[in-house]
Length: 459
Image (cartoon, rainbow, N blue to C red; front, top):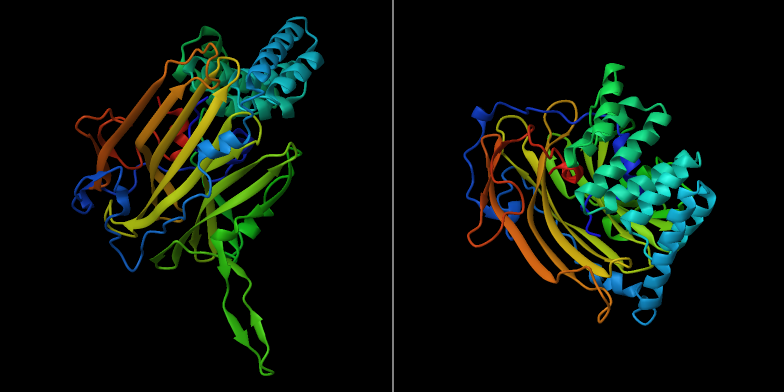
């Protein structure tokens, strides 16, 4: 299933609970610097870091592509038998749930997911079975993963409704209202409308916090990632986590009076020094799953003198089973005058690559997407001002050659050109190419997709 590039289901609850709201508006657009020449998706915003000595931080290419990672967990010889077994487990789970034997249903859906770990139908139905069984923790986990995995609006809308029910039972009325609101954006439904109206009549506010940044109270440490890991809640889905070695470097060393060197502890590499005590870094957290595979969550950190903030850019989900593989690479982090006055904005560009196979329909789908996000640094805290897809490509075909498939083989590429200035981004079509996002002029701070995570919920 093709998913959006930013938030894996296993971490979505972390992002939704972050503490600071992303703001709107920004600075007066009339004070902005002149717009620069249009940037195509290939060149992106890497042009023109306009303040200080800030330069793009270019990440190394991943050792394996998403397709290579997908193939590593795929047994072509056993695929036909696995597909048959997957469908049998799915049917058994549905039959058990219909009979209200939720324990048997959960076991059957888990067996299906052992074959196809990213199947939205199996994930969603497992979440709903767990909800009916009264296991809200399991229900929420797999329901969120189903939301992240679903490629069809109808499916995502249905599972977002399920999430709303779970959150209502937890007493999280505002969060439930957000989930119902998102569900209705994807498909009209009288039942969902009724539950949303009832919550709002009771005082619930459907305020979305997906674009919030997490504030860390202490002064920024040298090793940001190591400090961040200590804030992660225990989760029995994982058996450990570590920081990507490529994101750290040795600290400064000194020599004492006896000639003995000391210091040199690891520190997170700084991608951008904006000046005025503001610095920006990126780091990755590898989380090892008890089932074998793992995720790599990629974070952006903003250091504001005596405090620091983090926000998730996206993640790689590589369970090590079935046909699924992902990679995420931060292409550049640059400072650029867009709004005018005060500190420059930070433009972050990253590329997400995803390959996934559906054992039920025998469909292989791949997607690559380049995402551009703009972060504002004025005020007491950083805030996302907007994000959009600058380019994308998809590749669809049968996963198991020679077998019946629901796939219509196709390849599709989309892209736009864009330029910043005057407090806005102007997004235009590229001749001969379908746009990868809506075209037009969009005020930063008032875009529908306020941050990379928000792209999950933009129609």
